Amino acid sequence: MRRVFVAGHRGMVGSAIVRLLSAADDVEVVSATRSELDLIDQAAVRAFFADRAIDEVYLAAAKVGGIGANNTYPAEFLYENLMIEANLIHAAHTAGVDKLMFLGSSCIYPRLAEQPMREDSLLTGPLELTNEPYAIAKIAGIKLCESYRRQYGRDYRSVMPTNLYGPGDNFHPANSHVLPAMLRRFHEAKLSGADEVVIWGTGTPLREFLHVDDMAAASVFVAELPAERYWTPATERLSHLNVGSGAEVSIAELAALVAEVVGYSGRIVQDPSKPDGTPRKLLDTSALTALGWQAHIGLREGLAETYAWFLENAEHLRQA
Image 1 (cartoon, rainbow, N blue to C red):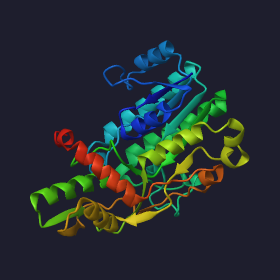
Image 2: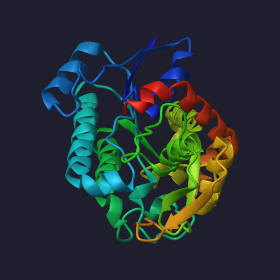
Image 3: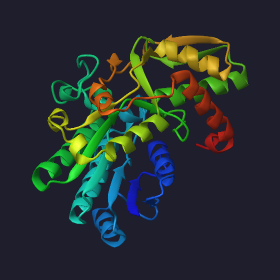
Image 4: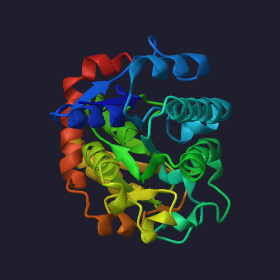
């Protein structure tokens, strides 16, 4: 049995990875709640690895949030994410763990990067200011994995997902990402009979969305590729691989689709006084496609599933 530690197992991505790994006959999933292990505590993380005989790591733990949360808590987004990844990656190395998968974010790319964004666009221009601290932390995680491979020969890989959504998402009205925030807002507007729903910005930015189950499948696919298939001349020059759906939608189109899925029939109004964020974010996933993986869950199908999960958990989420 492979003992695989999934950091962030209660989060949206981490829980999807756990569901997938738990179906394998040769995997024993290792996890720890925040009360059992503070990932920001370096000594606690090193002790955890020393005691668990872990074979592989999926680093899905992170402090995450939308534009509002990133603007409000930049220090926490930078500090906590830096500490989490530095502690886990170094502890894995000192404990002799040879395989690690780091999950980043597409916000690592320059604000005006050429579209679709290729892996080699990293560090070629200024970042989007609204999430720069989070992006810097994720870039540091990529470079940590790359450096431990270069210096110590560790098989530490990184995947960069586009915007994710799905069951287990954060639906907080102020601190969530755009899609779950919209789902909750349109749902509450439907219940209250509101005449209109206001969305941030002009509605023109383009975004790509990937269902969390597709992201989990891609992460496990990349992590389990034999070294001779993964570390090829094509991927050796890349510090990470992009993971996306290959389809993009404007924020205005997304709002209309969410309203349709939820069953809201009122007006949708844009508030241009609020920030748009990056004008366009589409990932070039040709490197991952060449290795044999592609997304399977369409946006409307995924939204319907996510809304169904939201309804099933509405009472709990109402307290958030």
